[in-house]
Length: 287
Image (tube, rainbow, N blue to C red; front, side):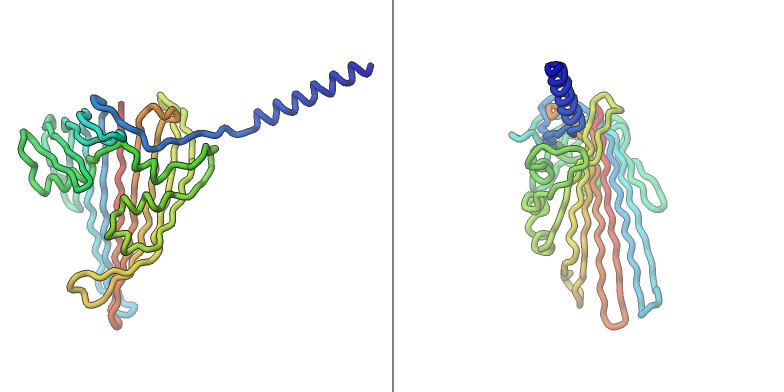
């Protein structure tokens, strides 16, 4: 009788332990800085949009309100030819499928389908050539907004958690690493920057189970002077990220979305000007 009772107690304890283990959420090591490899190939689909709005006031009276929108859309087959030691693209070739510039009033084809573009990336900027000749400066400026050196450790340096995290976890962004990317000039202006990262979702609908990581950085207030302007501008900046990577860290990123919202205001007497600039870049890497 006693033995039977003891066995039931042991069985009950085992069931409780198993139940507790089953309820324990899984922790993941989210390595977000993924290295790419030479000879990697993928289809790049990217859209860049910049929206600029300026309002001018005299007292409470609105004197002017203008909005300009520029959108760049590209689809190109990419072949990686050279990477840095940490796996960031240093050189790749594109074959253009479509490349358009859209404004408030019109749409332009920037390059024809089938155009082959060679791309070099460095900290000092990007170089794009067609048939061995550099593209026009205006075309290079458009390309640099949608075609970048993907991969490498920089993203992970900024966004990676220091330990395994469970779904829904939030942690501090590495602000020192973010400042290295922003550069000295912006850091000099934006003395106070805060940021957090969130393990937002797990997506099992695609060919690979992916982690969706979101992040937000904010410089709440800073002052800057423009050459020739009689008064300073007071600004703020919010930057947001959405990064989709396979849970298996051996595979490269699936998608990246970045956006910034910049607000500036200046006043002199009863005159006041407000400016809002929002940018967003959405990229898919289809393999």
